[in-house]
Image 1: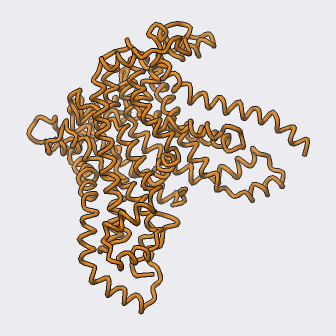
Image 2: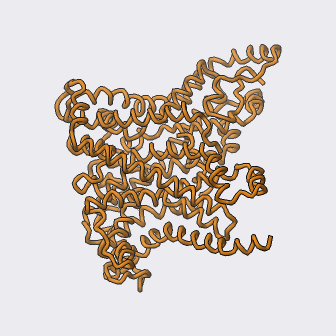
Image 3: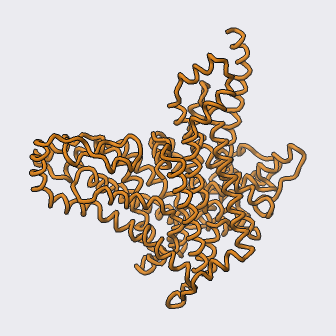
Amino acid sequence: MTLVTQPPSTDSPSADASRRGPTRPAEGARVRRRRRRFGRRDYLLFLAFTLPNFVIIGVFAYWPVIYNFYLSLTDWDFIAPSPTFIGFANFIDMFTDRSFLNVLWTTLVFTVCIVAGSIVAGLLLAVLLNQKLAGRGIVRTFIFSPYVLPGAAVATIWLMILHPNFGLSRAIFGAFGAHSPAWMTNSDWALPGLILVYLWRNMGFCTIVYLSAMQSLPIEQYEAASLDGASKIRQFLSLTIPLLSPTTFFLLLIQVIGTFQAFDIIAVMTGGGPAGATTTLSWFIYQEGFKAFDIGHSAAGSVLMFLVLLALTWFQSHFVGRKVHYQ
Amino acid sequence: MTNATTRQVPLRWLNYLLMIVVGAIVVVPLFWLVTSALKPSAEIYRWPLTWIPSRPEWSNFIDAWNAAPFAKFFLNSTIVTVIGAAIKLVLALTTAYAFVFLRFPAKNILFLVMLGALMVPGHVTLLVNYLTVSDLGWINTYAGLIVPGVASVLGTFLLRQYMMTIPKELVEAATMDGAGHLRILLTLIVPLARPTIITVAMIAIIDDWNSFIWPLIVTNTVDMRTLPVGLLYLKDNEGFNNWGAIMAGTTMVAVPILILFFIAQRYVVAGLTQGAVKG
């Protein structure tokens, strides 16, 4: 044990920061003297080892947040020599513009459906795949695979499947004697279609996270419940769901953060259309910034996204606590 | 007891049925991708659907290869992925090592500063990073594609977590024997941390290979595009006419990552689920 010992963290990532290991004074002093001799060299090496990472993070993660706040208060088109400061005009513009309120509504529907859908599907599938079934290993592997595919590839695969003339969609609707909707080119069907694709991509991820949380569920409680005559469904409702709630909150946060930034599948499948039907906040930021060259509005959209996600993260860590599931 | 087991039999069959349905939902789209890429174009548009190509052929791949510079896309994606992931891994290793085994004032506060970067959603940084990269003169270059993404907070975090479980005495003994820190890192820590290193490398490779919006923004000529962005180019270029070629292109983008996933599944899943845990 030395003065600088940090016990390996067993609970939360930041809690270890303030703890120190116990020290025997005499040995501690000896070690400290020796340490001092090596101290300066340690400092230099520490800088050499960490500085590149810190520089990149500073330039490409922290600086953008700061400068973005400023840009959101300006009017700029990339061409004028410098941004013009206009105060909160961009925000006032946006929040009084029906089409932007529509963007927020689309983002809300998109996020809620995908997050809730993939969590519910993930939980049910985890319960299914947690039973001793032959071949469940293969299904577990495959169910995760869409999550690692490039979004652009997921998008083209599903464009073809949802094609109303020669896609599987025609066969499926045909089986019920109906015509396939023109999914991505119909403004009523494009958003539900996108949600479907994201559910396909994300549900396996939720399943696997739930499955690994289920491995540490207390068996005794289930045995006790069985002895008391509680049915499987009863056990699921009053044991499994509450015990897994930290995992659920964690998935909720992760999925909202991911879904808010969803871009690649939207870009390839709909490009925010038709007629803005799939323009989410993340597409709006891209569209305003890199297609319309309206930097102020794009930056204002980014600020909004940042604040919403920050608030959510803060909410999670303060009210839900640090009970998130660690492996 | 017998009563209970007989009651369970239909439930068991129901479970298997559900499992098959779920498996099909996941696998059929992938199956459709690969078979469509191998179908003669007449069979793609034929009704009723053709499930298995009558005679698999490669013409779609040739079409895709001719319609867009796929060789260049492949090269670009490979360069960006290999170099990007390698730098990310090295930086994560050195940073984690420094935080665990080297002395520095206010180390823990510095670590929180680093972790704080996880709170910054990538999408929010696009605009300013584009401006920064263009000020650096890096638009449409490999540097522009790679550098902004090489800091790995998550990788650093995972490796630090692991290194904190290595007994300090081990490193101190090596220092006593006169080994430098770089040597300790390479010959002592790296072999011990191998599983975590593979995990971190896998997340980095998948992230870089799949990356879409940053390459889309930071490159502006076809020959600098990476595979996922190239796929968008192929789709827009081919319109909705040559679906065989689009599926062939998609296969080229998707198959390498799928192979990697099936080989290193354990590490990928561990990385992505832990990664997600941490933010």
